[in-house]
Length: 160
Image (tube, rainbow, N blue to C red; front, side):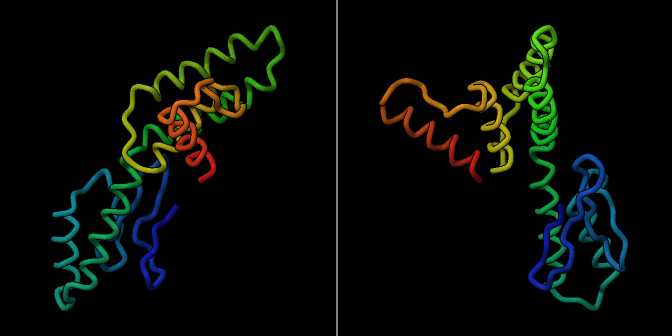
């Protein structure tokens, strides 16, 4: 996953398990987890003293894109684990189903304890809710407006 600038150059490059690379200047990149915005701007200013604010804004945009990718890293990783575990659970024979279900349940319980910060994080949590309802249409059995809104939000996230 990469974020792009208006001129289609890379802002942040996602590598490994959700550790984006961000540009430091003159073709060099550094993992997001190993730097700060101040460090990036210092390196950029040293590499490109002739540039004004516009390219510097691209470095800030790259940092912000990387920061957004990193914010819900653990939730996104657990979402991928849940997708795999749920797929296995659906294929499991009767004697293996309980163990497969327990794996999915443990993942969902871990997701429950992590706060979502981005739309992607909330979408991951919506998948966990869908798992709780066996992938069926979500219906809490009440017609109150608040629960209708909850169901609507979950369905919107799953469709996004």
